[in-house]
Image (tube, rainbow, N blue to C red; front, side):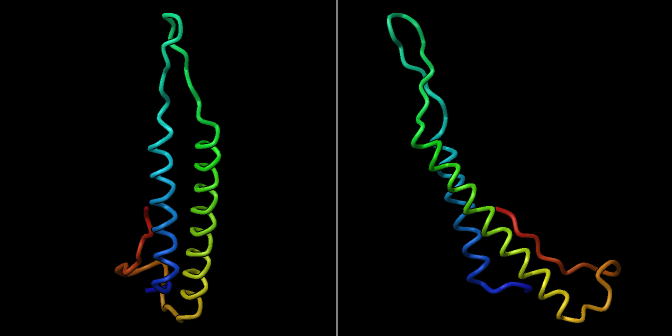
Length: 90
């Protein structure tokens, strides 16, 4: 493993928080005088953008540490041979 568990956990927590906010952003329509009016929740949109930013920051830290650790590990051949790479997805 190229990163510590706490860095990986911080990334996963940031991903899940972002996804939770995005789920709450689903637009809804209000009926007003027989018309449907699109209602935006600006506060929730702001929280979602902040969650996206925290996830991006956690992702940057995760990959920066992983890249530094790969360079320091004297990995014999990064481009060839069987891969034991770990991919970090939400």
